[in-house]
Length: 145
Picture 1 (cartoon, helix red, strand yellow):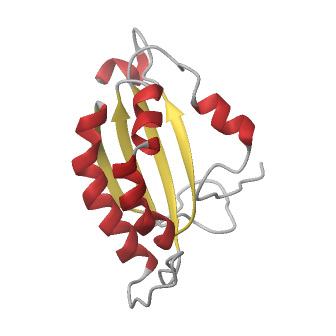
Picture 2: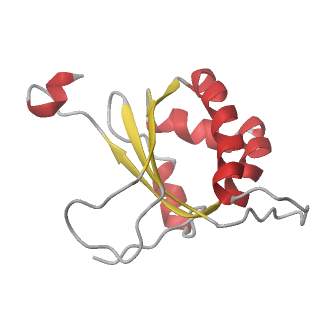
């Protein structure tokens, strides 16, 4: 399995897929985050922030923005150990957000409000994986929701 971290979607096909309705019911976005050692702002501003610190500025603001788009932050934690499997480089943080629909996520990430705070996200991230998930219906761990 090849893994490619990205900061923004790089293929037009992926953006087109994001605009499709997606599954019914809520989606849970699993975010695997890898931070730059030092934040790098696209506008060239000088900063002493680490990538982690820049991303935390984004995170604090996106938590406030999520409810406007039928979303909520559920979980965020530092990655400390890989218990099973092998990967060349471990992610730094895992975050989970819940949205009423894929469309709500897309509307939020297309909004001017989100773009204004995303400068910190882009400055701090070396890359990430965003994995859309849905809870299982009628049993399994999905019944725990």
